[in-house]
Length: 602
Image (tube, rainbow, N blue to C red; front, side):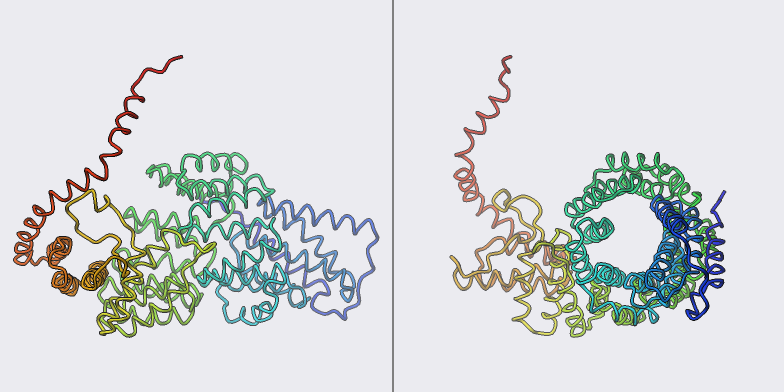
């Protein structure tokens, strides 16, 4: 049975009533008598107590402490900066309390009061901008970011707000750069380090993300959050059992908080313990503190198990608590899309976009729904709208480019792929394996588009890049006579005749086209390599594989005879090369085995 507290909503009403009864909006109102020192100390203690409650995620208690301090501070002469600062401080803490309770709309209202009271307060401007962005009020937030942009790198709160904005729009490169600026100014900033870790993990930098999580935990004073973050650190590098231990430890500290339940549910999914995962997803939504993310996760999990009605009921309940939220419509759209209710899914995704024009997943999921229902041109319209709203999103540009290529709109696809290249994250001049694989695929896609538009020089350039980036799997060439795809081809002039060099270039283009399943063109390129270097058996083997994937069995049978003959010709030479290469190490290897088998003396 759901048991979410409603007292925090009463707290919002109490805050507004308190402000209306104080001279916050009309600074010329006669001020009440100044407090004596004892009252001031008492108010400071109340603020400190409220802050501590917020740190411990006891949000109702925190706001209950802060409201009386706010009332007392607001009754002082607000033409004095010290008094104004105290009011703004209380308001910002109360607003943070609403944010922690997943009520960005209430938070934005409180931050707006603080900003109106003191527009020069950078923290008020930064918090308001972020809350407006989270609640989908993008137009209202833009003037605030304009105020913050000149302070990038100069003020910590402004820089963090700009980083959050960049990450909200999936501009990960800019977001990480801005977070690094925050951390350079304040190495102890746990939240900035936590955000950086999250997005590093999302870009495939798992080791770096794990270390960033640990740095965040080291700088975290809250014992509960420290265990949560350590769990995230272990999960980033696949240490699910250690992550489980940290999350269970977090649960002992705050058993009624939803975060550890939800994250432990993910860990149990990693461990393929679906029943335990479901139990914790259910526990998360039954905690006193509301977690919208936990509700959405439970709904999507139920939906994945075919329980569509139950999933929709879960979202309907959340909608009563957050009717303004874009994520509500997004989750409902995903549920409808999974059951091929295209009309209902489109309606929900459109409402998600209307509620938050920068909710990139609403665009991507709507476009994917159109593609699955064989409406690619509608998908292209959605992608176009997405890149206009979030012009630095790698996901959006890549999806747009892939769809244009699939529709054979080669020139437009080239332009879209070129937008993706600067958006792939590098850390310390390194790229994650995930990033390398992604970049290799982009170069293969771009090269294919150049090939189709007869830009052969550009085709070769992209094939070279793909050849250098593609992931090599399987045994080294010298350990196998049979090869189905080229590994790293020698595309330099060193030790190669001109025909061999040209043959390698054709093979590189062929392999790139094979990656993109342009099999007719792939076979054509391999045949040109064979014409230039007929004695190379590899070209025949690669061609055979391409013909088989293509389903051209008559040609594949012909090529199979050629390959068989080439292999038999190649076998004596290959055996001699193996003997020369591995014979020298045979004795030492045997001796090593004998030493391992010898008895160990005490």
